[in-house]
Length: 139
Image 1 (cartoon, rainbow, N blue to C red):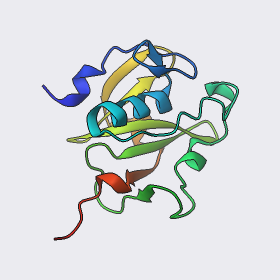
Image 2 (image 1 turned 90 degrees about the vertical axis):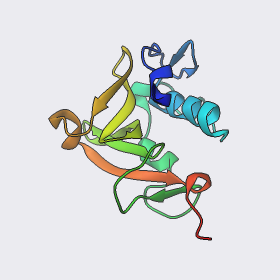
Image 3 (image 1 turned 135 degrees about the horizontal axis):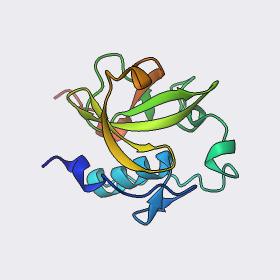
Image 4 (image 1 turned 120 degrees about the horizontal axis):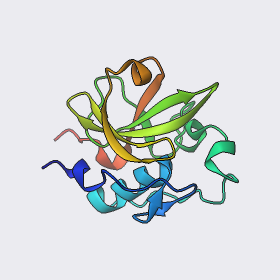
């Protein structure tokens, strides 16, 4: 069993931040806390609801090297955050699990594992981002 299986089926909840329900940022936050011991900010007061939020890209510093996120220039690895366009905004996150798959909140349904080669996701991928605390440091 892979770590991501423990999250499959968690229900979607607007601004949700725990196992009773999550939005896409809440799921990433939950995974980081439980699997990596990294506390990500809640951002639950940063926007009125998931449907009206500003670009999630701003939360992870897509345009700069400021903050704990760095663009992934090679193939995304486990726990990298994957940023996708939804409409005109880059506002959906998935968590890479390896093997060309990701864990994400599927709309207003539940957490699922899907393949990144699926046309629905392949054509919307904006970028992948790695938290500095998960980077492998050279010896």
